[in-house]
Length: 531
Image (cartoon, rainbow, N blue to C red; front, top):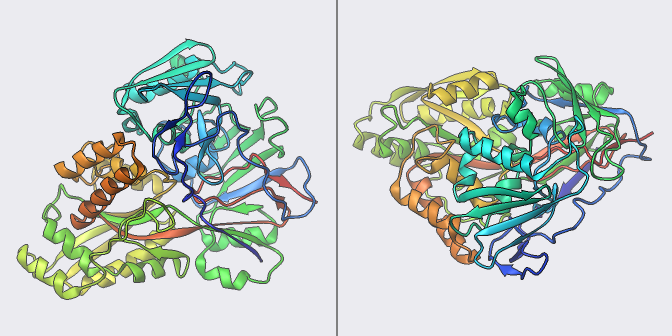
C-alpha cells in the first residue's frame, strides 16, 4: 500500500477577501479559511502522479457505500448524492485544495466599500451539458429557486436582499448586512449548484436527471444499480476531464468494496474500514489517501419528546458516554475525539470538553430529572454508514450502565433521512460532512429556525450569537462568538459530539491525479487511468 497522509491545509488564514477588480480596493474582512481568493486565478492545480504513466481516456469504476436519494443538488442532503454531483455541477466559486475559496463559474468578483454589494463576473463561453450558454440569469434563477421554495440551503441566503443580473456576465448580490463568509455560503459544496434557468422554468426533473456545467454529463441513473457519467467535451476548463467517464456502483459492504478494488472490478472506493489499514500496508495493489478531515460525528435526541426535553436528561446521556471509546469503536485510530464539532486542525477550533465520562454525575442528573430508574429509547443509525452501527453498540453498552436501554434501529439511508425529516426518532447518530466555515458547523443545526434542526433545539442566546457571528467582520471577534456558541450547544447537549474522522479513500495504482480532500469532496476532473 502506498499511504498518503496529507496535512489538513484548511487552517491557512488570509484576511483580504476577494474584493479586487476594476477600480475596487482590497477590503479587510478579517475572516478565516472561507472567503479569500486571488480573483482570476485558475481553479485547482494538477495533482501529482503516483500511479504510473497517466493516459487520457477510459472509464473509472467508483464504488460508493450507499445510493443517492435523488440528484437534485438543491434538495438532496445525501453525501452519496454529492459525491456524484461534485462531478456534474459547478458553483460560482469553490474550495481549492487548501479549502480557500477560488474562482469557478465566476472568474473574479469585487465588493462595495460598505461590503453590502458583491459583484461577480462570469467566465465567458461556459455552456450547460444541453448546449445552452451560461448567463447571469441562470445564477439568479438558481438562487431564487433555493430562496423562494425554501429549499435545504435557503438559510445560507439569510442576509441577501436581492440577486440581480444587469447583463449576461454580471451577477450582483445585494446584502442587508456585511456577510464575511458569503463565498463559503455560495460555494462550499454543490448544494449551491448553478442550474439552467430554462430547466427551472420548464419543470425539468432534477431528481432523476441532470444538466450542469461540470466536467461530466449524466448518462444514466438506475436505482439500486448505479450511475454512469460521460466526459463533457464542452467543459470550460481546457483539456479536462481526462477520463471518458465515471461508472458509480453502490456497494454498502466495506469488505466487498475492498475486495472488488483488489480484484480490479472497481478502480476507486469511497471508504476503507480502519481495521484494514494495517493489513494493506506494504501492498502494491492498493493506494490509500488519508487526510485529517473536518467532518464531525454526533448523536442527537428528539427534544420534542419526553424525557429529552429536559436538559438534565440530555446532559446525563452525555456524561454517561465516552467519546474516545465511541470513536475507537467506530474508527479505531482513524478519528480524533472532540466534544465541540470543529476539529483541532482548524483556526476555529475551541478546546472545550466538559463531559468525558462520569457515570455518577449521569446518574445524579437522571435522579434530579425523575428518571433515576432509567427508560428505553431508540437510536436510529444507517448501515450505509457502518461506523454509526459500530458506534451504536458502544453507546448502548455505556448507557445501560445508568439504566437507559437502547434499541438500535438500523435503516437504509433514504429511510433514515425520511424518518429524521418527519421527527420519527428518539435519537439518532450521524455525521456532518464538508464543513469549512464555523457557520457550517452550527447555524443550520442549532439555530431555532435552522433548516436542519430536526431535533427541535431552541436557545435564544444561541440564536442571537449565531446571528451576530454571521455579520461580524473581525476574525478574532468572530471566533470569540463561535467559542461561546460551542460552549452553549455542548452544555445544552443539543448535539452530543463524539469525534472528527480521518477521510480515507482507496484506489488502484492505475489511477492518477486523484487526491483525498479534507472537505470530503470527490473530484475526478483531473483524474486519469494509467497503463
